[in-house]
Amino acid sequence: MSVGQPVVAVVGRPNVGKSTLVNRVLGRRAAVVEDVPGVTRDRIAYDAVWSGRRFTLVDTGGWEPDAAGLAAMVSEQAQAALDTADAVLFIVDVLTGATDADEAVARVLHRSGLPVILVANKVDDARSEADAAALWSLGLGEPHPVSALHGRGSGDLLDAVLAVLPEAPRERFGADTGGPRRVALIGRPNVGKSSLLNKIAGSRRSLVHDEAGTTRDPVDELVTVGGEEWMFIDTAGLRRRVREASGAEYYSSLRTATALEAAEVAIVLLDAGEPLTEQDQRVISMVVEAGRALVLAFNKWDLVDEDRRLTLEREIVRDLGRVAWAPRVNVSARTGRATDRLAPALRTSLESWGTRIPTGRLNTWLGEVVSATPPPARGGKVPKVLFATQAGVRPPRFVVFTTGFLEPGYRRFLERRLREDFGFTGSPISISVRVRERGERPRP
Image 1 (spheres, helix red, strand yellow):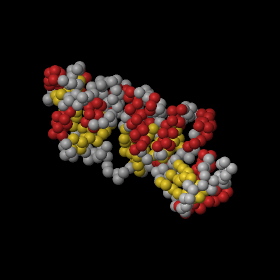
Image 2 (cartoon, rainbow, N blue to C red):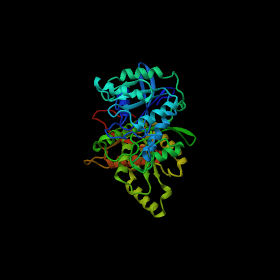
Image 3 (cartoon, helix red, strand yellow):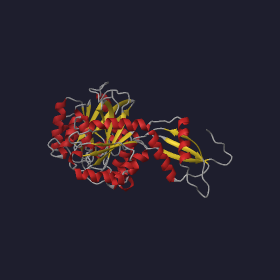
Image 4 (cartoon, rainbow, N blue to C red):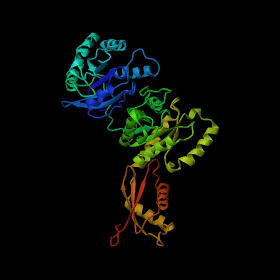
C-alpha cells in the first residue's frame, strides 16, 4: 500500500459482496472471494486508481457490531479500518434489504463523521433498483445501485468516491522508509504467524483465534525489529499443494506464493511442540525453490520441555538437513521471547543472499578444491573442471565450466565446500554445470 493516498474503507455485513466489489474496482482477483460468509477476516489494503486518481481500498471482514468470539475480532478489524479512513463504502445486500445489523452499522458510521457512500449491491437489473431505493431508510443519503459481480453501476460509484475524497489523506499509514526489506512470514496453519506479527508490531494487526486458518489474505505490516524497519507479510497457512487446494484456500495459496515472490527473505514459523510435518517441509521447499533467503523460527518455545527439545534436535538433523544452512531462532509469540533475535538472523540471511565472490578468488578456491578432491570418473573419463563464474546474486548462482558431466553428488560437495569457506548462512545457492563443446575455447 502506498503512503500519501486517500483511504477508502469497505465495510458491511458478511457475504454482502465487499471483496467482489474490491476485485471489480481493482480489475483483478486480488481479494479472496467465495460464496461462504466470513472469507475475509483481516483488513487488507490495495492500491486502486480511477480517472487518473490514486487511492487505497481497505477490504474488511464482515462487520457485526454485536458479534462475539471470532466474529467480534473481525468486527474490531473493520472498526480499526475507520480510524485511518478518509471515506467509507458501506455495502448492503438489496436481496435481503436493510437488517438490524445494517442499521446498527449505519448508526456507527453516522457518528464517525466520515463521508459515507451507501452501496446497494446485487442490483443485477432494472427491476432491482426499486429495492435499492428502500435503503434511503438508513439515513446515509442516496443508495448507489451496483452489481459488483457483473460491474453494473461501478463506474458511477467510483465517480462518487472521487467526489468525496480529500486531496491528502487524513492519516498516513506509515512513513517513507526508503524501502524496508520485505519479509514473508509463512508456515502451516495455526503455528502462530499472526500472533508473532502482532507481538512484534505491538498491536493486534492480524486476527488471532484458536480456529486454524483465520488469515486468508497476505497482510502487510511495517514494524520495527532490532532498531530497523521491516515490511512483514503475514500469510495464510498452507495446508496442501496449490493444485490440491480448492475454493478460498486455493486463492489464498496463490496469494501466499505471490507474497513469497515479492519478499526478499522468509521466516518459516514451525511449532516447536509438535513433530515436523510434511506441510512444514513443503513450506520450506517453497522458499528454497523461490530462491529467497530463509530464517527458521521455532515458536511456542516457552512450552517445550527438555525431553521435547532433545527429540526436536533429532528431528531437525533428520528432516531439515538440506537447510542446515538456515539460521534458527527459538521464539515465543505469546511471551515475546527472543523475538529481538529475529533481526540479526534476517540481516545475516539477506547479506548472504546478496554476496558476490570475485571471479579470481572463486577460481583460486575452485582449483584448490578440485586438486584435493577431483570429480568422479564418468564413462571411464574424469571430467576436467575448467573454471567457474558467479552468474548472479539474490540468490547466489554459480556456473562451473567442465569437459564433462559432473555427478549430482559432486555438485553437492562443491556447494558444501562453498558454504564452509564463504558462509552463505541463510541463503540458498545454486550450482549449474556447462559442458564445453568441442572446439570451444575456455574463458578464464
